[in-house]
Length: 124
Image (tube, rainbow, N blue to C red; front, side, top):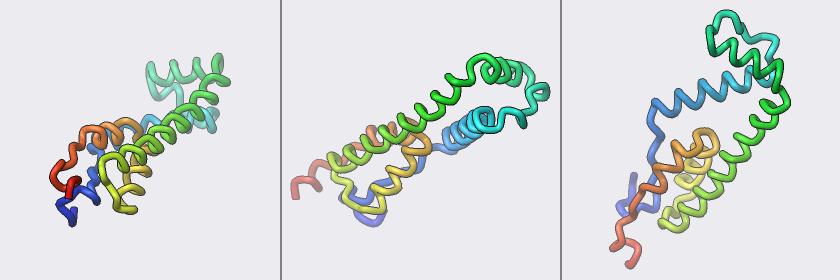
Protein backbone atom coordinates (compact mmCIF):
# COMPACT_ATOMS: atom_id res chain seq x y z
CA UNK A 1 0.00 0.00 0.00
CA UNK A 2 1.75 3.12 -1.19
CA UNK A 3 -0.41 5.72 0.55
CA UNK A 4 -1.29 5.88 4.20
CA UNK A 5 -4.66 7.53 3.56
CA UNK A 6 -6.30 4.23 2.54
CA UNK A 7 -7.10 5.29 -1.03
CA UNK A 8 -5.25 2.22 -2.37
CA UNK A 9 -6.38 -0.24 0.33
CA UNK A 10 -6.57 -3.87 -0.85
CA UNK A 11 -6.22 -7.19 0.97
CA UNK A 12 -6.20 -10.62 -0.64
CA UNK A 13 -8.64 -13.21 0.69
CA UNK A 14 -7.09 -15.98 2.72
CA UNK A 15 -5.59 -18.90 0.85
CA UNK A 16 -8.07 -21.23 2.56
CA UNK A 17 -11.06 -19.42 1.03
CA UNK A 18 -9.40 -19.05 -2.36
CA UNK A 19 -8.76 -22.80 -2.54
CA UNK A 20 -12.10 -23.86 -1.05
CA UNK A 21 -14.18 -21.66 -3.35
CA UNK A 22 -12.10 -22.41 -6.45
CA UNK A 23 -12.28 -26.18 -5.92
CA UNK A 24 -15.98 -26.24 -5.04
CA UNK A 25 -17.00 -23.95 -7.91
CA UNK A 26 -14.79 -25.92 -10.26
CA UNK A 27 -16.46 -29.16 -9.17
CA UNK A 28 -19.91 -27.56 -9.44
CA UNK A 29 -19.11 -26.29 -12.95
CA UNK A 30 -17.84 -29.74 -13.93
CA UNK A 31 -21.01 -31.41 -12.65
CA UNK A 32 -23.28 -28.91 -14.40
CA UNK A 33 -21.59 -28.66 -17.81
CA UNK A 34 -19.78 -32.01 -18.16
CA UNK A 35 -21.74 -34.42 -15.92
CA UNK A 36 -20.89 -37.43 -18.09
CA UNK A 37 -17.17 -36.95 -17.32
CA UNK A 38 -17.43 -36.81 -13.51
CA UNK A 39 -16.02 -40.04 -11.94
CA UNK A 40 -18.92 -40.44 -9.48
CA UNK A 41 -17.84 -43.89 -8.22
CA UNK A 42 -14.36 -42.62 -7.29
CA UNK A 43 -15.68 -39.75 -5.18
CA UNK A 44 -17.44 -41.72 -2.47
CA UNK A 45 -20.45 -40.09 -0.82
CA UNK A 46 -19.84 -36.80 -2.64
CA UNK A 47 -19.95 -38.60 -5.97
CA UNK A 48 -23.14 -40.46 -5.06
CA UNK A 49 -24.78 -37.22 -3.92
CA UNK A 50 -23.66 -35.36 -7.05
CA UNK A 51 -24.89 -38.18 -9.30
CA UNK A 52 -28.28 -38.06 -7.58
CA UNK A 53 -28.48 -34.28 -8.05
CA UNK A 54 -27.45 -34.51 -11.71
CA UNK A 55 -29.95 -37.31 -12.43
CA UNK A 56 -32.89 -36.00 -10.42
CA UNK A 57 -32.45 -32.24 -10.15
CA UNK A 58 -30.31 -31.12 -13.07
CA UNK A 59 -32.48 -28.10 -13.85
CA UNK A 60 -32.08 -26.86 -10.28
CA UNK A 61 -28.30 -27.38 -10.44
CA UNK A 62 -28.07 -25.46 -13.70
CA UNK A 63 -30.17 -22.54 -12.45
CA UNK A 64 -28.27 -22.58 -9.15
CA UNK A 65 -24.96 -22.27 -10.99
CA UNK A 66 -26.16 -19.11 -12.72
CA UNK A 67 -27.63 -17.82 -9.45
CA UNK A 68 -24.28 -18.22 -7.68
CA UNK A 69 -22.53 -16.10 -10.31
CA UNK A 70 -25.32 -13.51 -10.20
CA UNK A 71 -25.01 -13.28 -6.41
CA UNK A 72 -21.22 -12.89 -6.64
CA UNK A 73 -21.64 -10.15 -9.24
CA UNK A 74 -24.11 -8.27 -7.05
CA UNK A 75 -21.69 -8.65 -4.11
CA UNK A 76 -18.93 -7.19 -6.29
CA UNK A 77 -21.12 -4.20 -7.22
CA UNK A 78 -21.87 -3.67 -3.52
CA UNK A 79 -18.11 -3.86 -2.96
CA UNK A 80 -17.59 -0.98 -5.40
CA UNK A 81 -20.12 1.09 -3.47
CA UNK A 82 -18.37 0.26 -0.20
CA UNK A 83 -15.02 1.25 -1.75
CA UNK A 84 -16.47 4.65 -2.55
CA UNK A 85 -17.99 5.03 0.92
CA UNK A 86 -14.68 4.16 2.59
CA UNK A 87 -12.60 6.49 0.44
CA UNK A 88 -10.82 3.85 -1.63
CA UNK A 89 -10.24 5.99 -4.70
CA UNK A 90 -7.55 4.07 -6.55
CA UNK A 91 -8.91 2.57 -9.79
CA UNK A 92 -6.56 -0.38 -9.41
CA UNK A 93 -7.68 -1.09 -5.83
CA UNK A 94 -11.34 -0.85 -6.83
CA UNK A 95 -10.76 -3.20 -9.78
CA UNK A 96 -8.96 -5.66 -7.51
CA UNK A 97 -11.82 -5.60 -4.97
CA UNK A 98 -14.41 -6.03 -7.73
CA UNK A 99 -12.55 -8.93 -9.38
CA UNK A 100 -11.77 -10.71 -6.14
CA UNK A 101 -15.37 -10.38 -4.96
CA UNK A 102 -16.78 -11.72 -8.25
CA UNK A 103 -14.67 -14.84 -7.85
CA UNK A 104 -14.69 -15.33 -4.07
CA UNK A 105 -17.86 -13.61 -2.91
CA UNK A 106 -18.23 -12.83 0.75
CA UNK A 107 -14.75 -14.18 1.52
CA UNK A 108 -13.56 -10.98 -0.18
CA UNK A 109 -16.43 -8.65 0.65
CA UNK A 110 -16.08 -9.43 4.35
CA UNK A 111 -12.53 -8.05 4.34
CA UNK A 112 -13.73 -4.86 2.72
CA UNK A 113 -16.60 -4.47 5.17
CA UNK A 114 -14.21 -4.88 8.12
CA UNK A 115 -11.90 -2.14 6.83
CA UNK A 116 -12.02 0.96 9.03
CA UNK A 117 -10.48 3.96 7.26
CA UNK A 118 -8.57 6.46 9.36
CA UNK A 119 -11.06 9.27 10.08
CA UNK A 120 -8.31 11.88 10.20
CA UNK A 121 -7.27 11.26 6.59
CA UNK A 122 -10.87 11.64 5.32
CA UNK A 123 -11.24 15.05 6.96
CA UNK A 124 -8.09 16.55 5.37
